[in-house]
Length: 592
Image 1 (cartoon, rainbow, N blue to C red):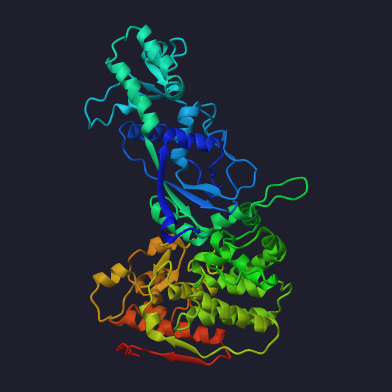
Image 2 (tube, rainbow, N blue to C red):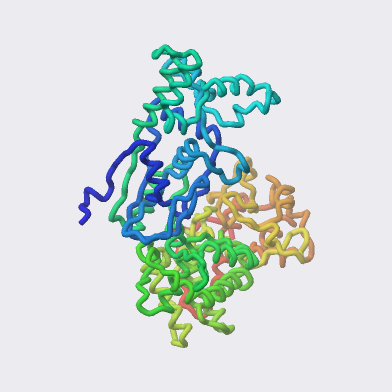
């Protein structure tokens, strides 16, 4: 039995023992490890640290009885076999260093490097000037393409090739395996003095190979979810290890004559490639969590009771295969609902990411949703997007939402609770790429399919234009610089989302920081009032422009009027639901 103190334990061994164990197929590299970014400079710096006996960081090893999909080879060397083991040793962090060490000594092939030979040589004539020398390693550690002069054609390599022929530039592998022969050769070349600097250097390299210790951190008896946390904290400079990566490796099945292969990452990537629109680009974890919901609904006693890492790690290949056909149909309906029923053109607008799971569950094994189904789902979306309380922020909420939706799906008569909204939250709303209410407001504006001010027959929300980022192309009706540069009696913040509208980039740039009553004149056509309605903009705005005058607190009036329009639109969308508005801030003193 593994004790608590033995769960995470440091260990070490020499470079050569580590590499022998690797070639002996005693370690595996799971496929979720990232692609090696291999450069000559990285390898030289690694060996310079070893040469100076500096630490190179610990290799993170996970010892477990769980079988994952492995990289079959590293640097061209086969490191895994098909035998069944009682314990596997997975390299979670250290693939780059391991590849560099292995190929430096044993050669091999680096993916993407063509016929390049990664075998490393050392020039024993290069001696560091002092202990702080940080440049000589660039000349000390060499690759064959930096030595081979191609019979004198490459002038810069002639000197190195001469030293190679004299036994002064040597393969690391030859130091490891044929040290005596290398030393004899130096004696034969006239370096008989035992203390000659070249022979001292040769012995130093041998001592380094024999004595430098590779540090390990071994994880044993630790569950997948905790492994992910440990990996993320240790590997702070890189990408965190995601549960999706683990499940991909765990559910992988190679193809053979009796059974079709399975590779979850490829399955989802192919689905993305075949699916139009932006919603298929949702992240891998969301896909996995949606599949977990389907498995829970479809497969009795699957044990997949939640979407947390603890349960996701128990997803089996056969579970995914059993639900995938209906899952793909449900996902297509889900993306269509967001795109063509709610008129949202990208996942950045979805107020709660759990909406993917709840709505997907409604479409799962629901081949022909009715008009009433879609009307119900729209009310559901707007109710929870705008409700004063965040009622879909955890997995407990998620479970109750799915139960609520399933009752309607099965034909039970259900009712929404009272809808509550605080006007002051709309007033104070500001753009945030992750803020639930901010996304809800922008979703509502997108849902109105706002029209181009200059071309009334054109929708502003197009796939070409619409790419919501941390700095989207959103226009301030009252430009912030205009408000800042023109003292007024306004009390509200011009950065409120109530002062925001979608506009094409060229229109936005043209308006710049102009006074709204002036720039609106350029767009005042007989259709403009209808265009304003598609943006949920109050008519007072164009009236002020036509009068060439506006109140000193025009921004405050505008925001209050627009809040009323937003609330009015929500009342339409939530018809039949008890609807209550509160205001936690006294109304701004504005002229009516």
